[in-house]
Image (cartoon, rainbow, N blue to C red; front, side):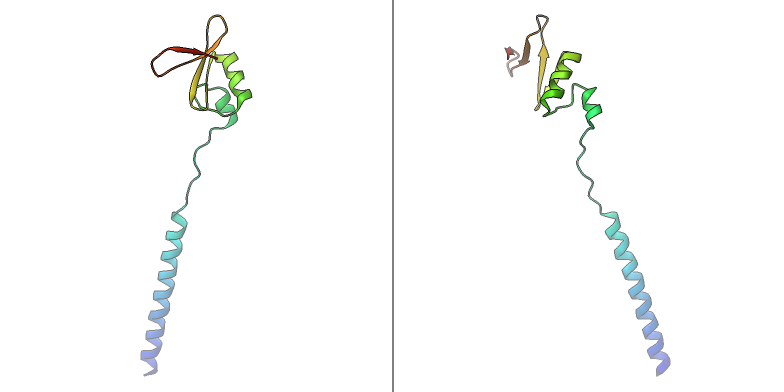
Length: 94
């Protein structure tokens, strides 16, 4: 009788150990990665990345003559006026 109880105890202990290892592995695999936010240097050298930083936007307009600000692309004309294109394709000067 004691042998059966000992074997049953060992089997339960083994199953408990195996089950806890399995759950711990699953918990470690489900990590949530944060949304991608470009670094300031990457934003500085790429005018096609949208920014909310007004100073960076002005720097990119001076350097590249175009910049995305809050999802809208602004351009600098040949006479140094800033504009964006409307949905109809018309230039809207600021």
